[in-house]
Length: 550
Ligand SMILES: [Zn+2]
Image (cartoon, rainbow, N blue to C red; front, side, top):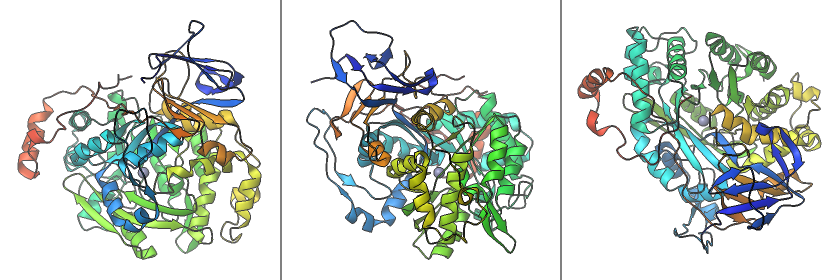
């Protein structure tokens, strides 16, 4: 049976913040995979009386479809044994259902099924080495139920660094545009600007915005400025996506604020902010600097962030920030891997468990919650755990519960050692409880708007018919982890809490224009330094059409 062309969701309580609808009982009409104003009477209906209706979830920052994730999967055979994922029973699906493994980095099909089971219908892999883009597209092909795309790593790219050194910022912009197009990426990503290249060159890391990278005439500041301006000049739907220098180190909030100030007035997204908001260092104990950073974010509308909340339990750190992973391996003693991606970036992976009795873990949990609870604009401070770095995406419902229910939050807070979190705003007591409308903003409407996805994150006419319907439950974690229905592009994929269909997702990518005069020079660079020929480098077959630019 194919999906009904038309469907009316009747009587649900709708939360659609992008259209100013905050808990109104109304019908949602679907035709041809899109939301429409109205339908003629008499067609198929879905009774949502007493239930909560929201747009499908949008994950702005996760790691689930990359060669790095594959390395991570190889590192944790014990998790695979502990969480086998049998093939779901999909009676109506034309594609064969696939078994897989779960754990912190599920296999591809299982990732798609589990996102759907959570009510998420769009997700981005936030760090893909351009050279490995082909691999990511193959993984996305095998990740059903979610529309998705990739962010291309550029902050340590040898060709870009050379252009920045030479003052050739226009050429850097043209190269970045070509790279987006060649890799089928959606956005530009910077990880530890210059720091990964410094690590690869034998330097420990870079510590400040004006420290030369590997003794060259290029600095983190110049990388940030060049790529931020390039993304904005190219009118990309999502601004440059920045993982700042000094992730996870005591006292790093000064670097975070300096990076924001360096780009003041320019649209930029600062990712997993929680990992960048620590005080202390220089002999002082670690402390929360969330208040100082969120004050800046609150006052600067051009800045957006996702939080990167840490949740207690198992996680997997996967990042292009290779020098950070060396530190993490040394401090945790856990198994690790560190990978060079020629001319472009690096990658480090360490499995990790966040413990509420551990000083840094407790502080990280507090810092993330402070960023959420002290934000005055949920549209610009959206939900992420940096899956699987701060915890699996499966922990989003528990995080939503922490934000909506102070008593649950305070119960967890009481289990932390008060000495470790003394002086933090959360320890002093924050009364705020998020509303359902605010949850709809930080998990759907906000990320969609920050990503420039005009057809996602809302339920107005013309939007993609991605809808999640929850039964109310006094336990909010239960409510958000077991949606009753999930509709993807007008197709009911979760019915009575069971996955029923697993359609392929759509690829979201951009293809900005550039002056192709740059290509002759890029070809020379490939001929001189790359193990891959220039002609073989671009991903040959990309699905779908690129998203329109702003
Ligand atoms: Zn990340």
